[in-house]
Amino acid sequence: MRKKKIWPTDKAPLVITLPKKGNLRQCQNYRTISLISHTSKVMLDIILNHPKPKAEELSEEIADFRACRSTVEKIFICWILIDSVIGFKKAFDRVWHVLGGFQCRGRPCSSHSDALQNLHQCSLP
Image 1 (cartoon, helix red, strand yellow):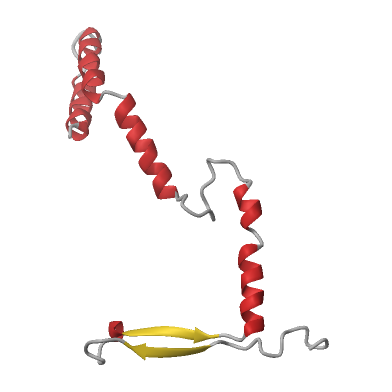
Image 2 (tube, one colour; image 1 turned 90 degrees about the vertical axis):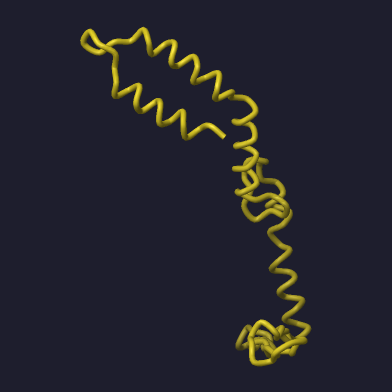
């Protein structure tokens, strides 16, 4: 053990498939378990739990590698905040009022108004 610097039982785990109920010709009707030696389980627990205290010290904005904190959840919270803070209907009503005062070379800017009209239609629920 000292010469090789590995655990003597640290080999690949033995994977066994156990049948569930149903048609045994389909793969989804089996579940797998892996048989690992006790020393390997202890080493895996140590490796798994070692970075947890350092991960909890990270700032609240960093969501990676932390339980119950995901990037998808952060994006969802941002969408809720944007939706609750910004009233898109009021914002676009004001844009049309302001846009009426702008002119491109003496006539209304149709390209800008067309782009804003498309954006307004996409933002309506």
